[in-house]
Image (cartoon, rainbow, N blue to C red):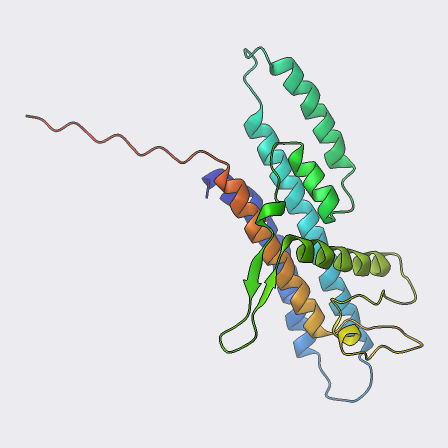
Length: 222
């Protein structure tokens, strides 16, 4: 991977996601062992989702800025004036990028010449467990679901949406009064999904970059 990309974009993303890992540890260490709904731990799980989605939003913006700067021609280039106009449009779009769903993400990255969608496919599954293959349409829906959850949390909605990413919904254990809850399992799944989505997208960005030139071999004396 290009050194500048590794040291800037990925480093910033990893640092942001560290807070999600720390919150998972907080949850695990705060268990009381008592029955009943754990409202404090549920709040921690909600915070994980909010931070994970914010980290995805930020890394998409960082990738866009990286590609935008890389593609800018020199001032002496005849296309520099047009490139400056496009740069201004992209920077305005960056400022308005607040809903990092698949559609908006693609539109932003395509504005700097990169389409991530073909890369959004991978297979999950530990040895001995059932493998699950995610294709672009699956990734788009999963990201949409997590964004809906994030939206409900941020706006203080009384109930969370009944979306498939939540374990309570899949297991049909939704409370009629409180709606679905966010469990520790959900928080971990959100972290894993955002990390994998970022990994494959960053890998695609790196593939767009020219390979580093090998250092010249010294000429041996004869």
